[in-house]
Figure 1 (cartoon, rainbow, N blue to C red):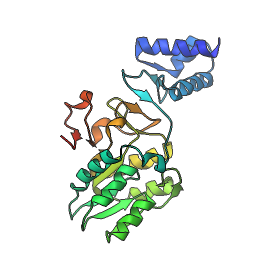
Figure 2 (figure 1 turned 90 degrees about the horizontal axis):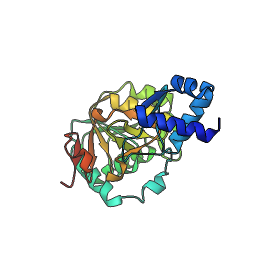
Figure 3 (figure 1 turned 135 degrees about the horizontal axis):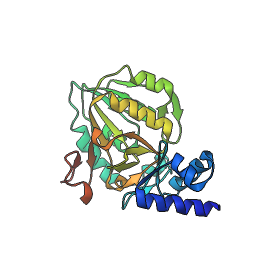
Figure 4 (figure 1 turned 180 degrees about the horizontal axis):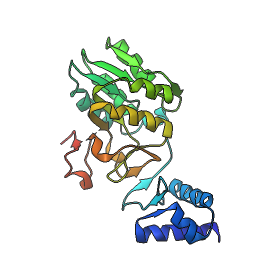
Length: 250
């Protein structure tokens, strides 16, 4: 059977059943499980389905999938005013007694510009965030681990180990994609693990995301949709009835 034929069968099954396992596809396509997994991965990267553990699920209407990860420089040129407004609102949530986790990212970075004098203590996995916080006289801890150059984030097992020692009052996170079904997603598995570890250590969790992130699915989920409040410049219609989505301009 040709590759294109297998792809079409997989997509037709998902259209009918909404989800399918790799074991089911192996029997239906009469091929090896490794071939099935390669097909699912290829279709996921092409934005045709959502790859999950053990199989695949269909996209919701309007959702898009992408494994692409822009650099910090590229992201810094997108939706600048929207990000600043979101960050200013988020910074206003910080109180003197807070112990804060500040995730790497351009929108979380704008929070530092909006901070005045504060006795809150920060932990971050972003070298640039730590430098800027320290320059403002704010107490900050930088977690250790491997430095990822494209996002300037510290990742890896050591970073996760460090985070497991902390109990944060509030955490502020970035995301590459947000949907109700797949939650908060990011392209890199190692970075997703650090985000997942950090968000689980926070009493109050906030995801800062401009409107372009809604309906997008990146490669790896780091938290379920219900696990955090979303701060955004403009709430899409499909999310307006949800208490967890806060439109900062409304």
